[in-house]
Structures are given as C-alpha cells and as structure tokens.
Image 1: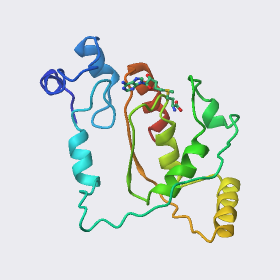
Image 2 (image 1 turned 30 degrees about the vertical axis):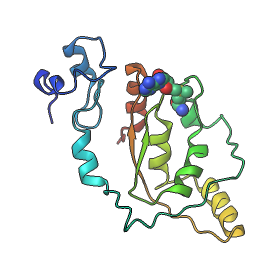
Image 3 (image 1 turned 90 degrees about the vertical axis):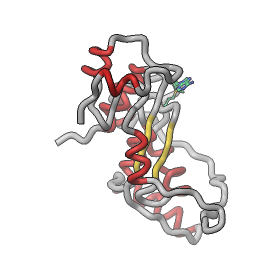
Image 4 (image 1 turned 60 degrees about the vertical axis):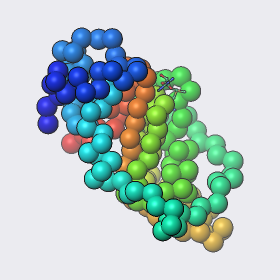
Length: 173
Ligand SMILES: C[S@@+](CC[C@H](N)C(=O)[O-])C[C@H]1O[C@@H](n2cnc3c(N)ncnc32)[C@H](O)[C@@H]1O
C-alpha cells in the first residue's frame, strides 16, 4: 500500500498533523501499519477487525480490575528504548488479559513507545515464568486466562514516539 500526497490531503486538516515535509512523512512511514501522521488507513482496519457496539445485544460484563500491579523495569524489552513514564509491558498485559478477549482491538491514544502494543502482542506468546505466575494467581481467584494476541491501535502526538512505537511493534524475522 502506498502513502501519497493525495492520501495525506485526506488527513492534513486533522489537528496535530506534523509540521514536517510530505516527503519526510512518507519516507518515515510504512503504510498501512504505520504513518508518521494521522493514519489514513485506520478506518479500514477498524472495519475489518472491529465489532459495532449494539446496546441491545452487548453482553460485555467485566468487573473492575482491583489488584495492585507492580512489574519490574529491568526487562530487556523494556530497556530497549527509554522514554518518560514508560510502562512495563507485563503490567499492561494484566489489564488487557482482564478486560479483553483474543482478537479484540486495544486503543492507546497516548502510546509513547508503544508498550501497549507490545503487551497486546505478548498475550499470544508470554514469558513462560510470567505465564505460570498469572495462571496461578487466576486459579486462586477461580478465573481463567484467555491467552492470544489482541490488536493494538497506537497513536501519539509526537512523531518520534510513534516511530519508536512502530519499531517496537513491527515483527522481526
Ligand atoms: C506518559 S507518555 C506515555 C508513555 C507510554 N506509557 C510508554 O510506555 O512508553 C504520554 C504520551 O502522551 C503523548 N501526548 C500528550 N498529549 C497528547 C495528545 N493530545 N494526543 C496524543 N498524544 C499526546 C506524549 O507525546 C507522550 O508520548
């Protein structure tokens, strides 16, 4: 998929559109997954993976997550790139696993380095020790965990942050 000046025109008037040159925005981007500006392809993604909310049929009913959450800041993934108020992905995983099901869309509009995206993906393939720990905790509370990736939509006002988030969240062979 290509990002062109004409496609950029569709999102150019959105508040927060970067002040940079079109050529630079296009060069930084990897459409449709990442654009260094409001993503013109996001509608298609939501149409494909989202589900419309219908109050009459909706059965979502999850109790608030109330446990204290404390995860260390020495994970190699966490340390790959520093950022202010960066959150360890394992802390975010606890909330995602509690509130969502595999395949759900998770939105972080202030994503910084994109740790919410890392957490959403790691729900498919968690560290073995962390998986055992969470399953033990869940068993004690009579709950089950639904492992499996969630789909993250990540945004940030800072193009630098989104670029870091993109690199954190792009699968590497
Ligand atoms: C506290 S940081 C998030 C860090 C993130 N939790 C992580 O783990 O890397 C907050 C982010 O919000 C972004 N931000 C501030 N105002 C914003 C706005 N109006 N729209 C989108 N992002 C915004 C900042 O650029 C910053 O990256």
